[in-house]
Length: 80
Image (cartoon, rainbow, N blue to C red; front, side):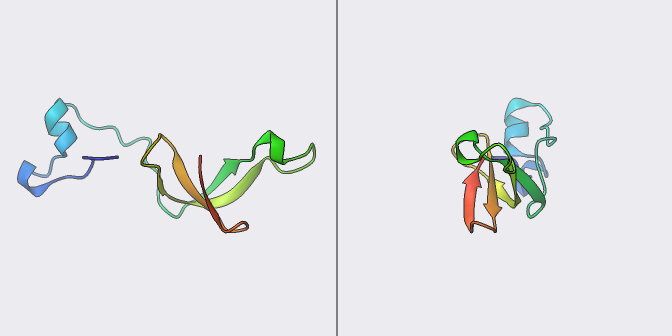
């Protein structure tokens, strides 16, 4: 998620928006700290177990198109 914040030198426009000439879409952005649920792999659960875990959105992955979610029950950060 680089070049997505407005810059004073560009007249409060984003660098990517100036480069491409298009207005950026922000429909896929989420609020940090918001409750979120992530899917549990089928290998780790049985027939009657829960299929999702509750966590909090803490950011976006820098290497792929994914969210980073903190699972307080396991005290781990997962990328989904």
